[in-house]
Image 1 (cartoon, helix red, strand yellow):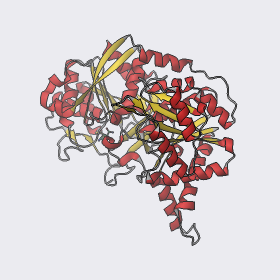
Image 2: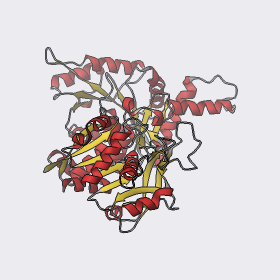
Image 3: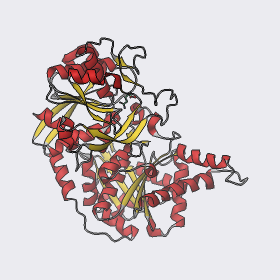
Image 4: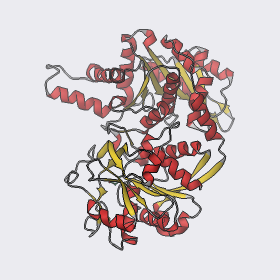
Length: 529
Ligand code: GLN
């Protein structure tokens, strides 16, 4: 029978529940337990695809094409597994299914209610994660903080599961915060007490409390939290601020959380093997050199909007014993200051994006990097602006553009292909998820991947226009990967350039700490030399 570990959060959001859940998964997996993780997002959106990355951080795309919250990205990176449909649930998805069933008459005349119908559907999906993956332990992170109105049905579902299943099969880990009062430098446990009280109001007594704290948690405070929150003292776990999120599994290991959790779940497991992970963290913390890479984007003020790209750069940097120091360059600044905004960087990366704002700054940056022989990595929109820049500057098509930004351009080098045309609904209508592609033998891309066939994840509506393929190739920006039917251009590279690559897909979603993505490795390597 599978076991369930719920991770709830209290006091404030942003304490790192996702990283804690991912770290628990990483630790149990390192001890030979078959683990999966599930994220519950209590908002009404059906998926994260329509949400503004400004407000909510990046939209992470799974292999099976689901647009999810960035925590799924943490899970994939910490577990080294591809996740999907079964690992993500939102209130929108739950209600959508219940309402669809009500419409076809499945409830046989009953009043359809939050309890039991919505809570049954939530429990069905939680158990579904175990069924779909065959995991022995399912870690379930409940988004938001306890006490949020949206979260109540989920807490109720967890309470019911605790009653229905044998005691060793369900555990609750509550992440809380112990702040320091700046005036008296005192650590305070009262917010933790209140958030546990809130959890108990929902009928749930936590088994573990992870107390996130800016400094070392004094023993006296451990005792106090144990007493006031009614958990054994050794189940109060200190969660100190760390320099890297990848240190969290090691810190939780040092606190013995994995062993204590296994005991609570009555689960036998082997000794953990974290050798490779420790080496990776060591390389992250003690780099031999530093390389400065500029990211030009619309949302640069908010790092979470580009989370997977940052992580992918750090994975590649660690493998090359280098710290990647990212400089954020708002595209508006490039529009104003031109090349001055790009000075001092070893390479430029332009990430994905939507909408016209800031595009001209990106086109300039892509063109500048090509002319200056500066390593350039264009991802999705970053590839599209490279194509626009090349059409204007190298092919002399002054008005070249993407149909997304100028529907009447005479040179729509990026365009909607017929199968995408006519789609007006916003949710889930893009080209999403993993698609196979074929890499041109002998290309730079081929050198980096080492193979000619690979699958990568997509999230876009527009494509490189096949009409202009030959002109581009002849002038030196050649398509170096195409869809298996040969129709879609998936990547381009500049021929007379040290490292100039644009990809229509999102390689960042496949980078893992211990297996960095080959293109990120290639790019960071090029920036280092
Ligand atoms: N806006 C572009 C498109 O829809 C690029 C999308 C992206 O960068 N993810 O094709």
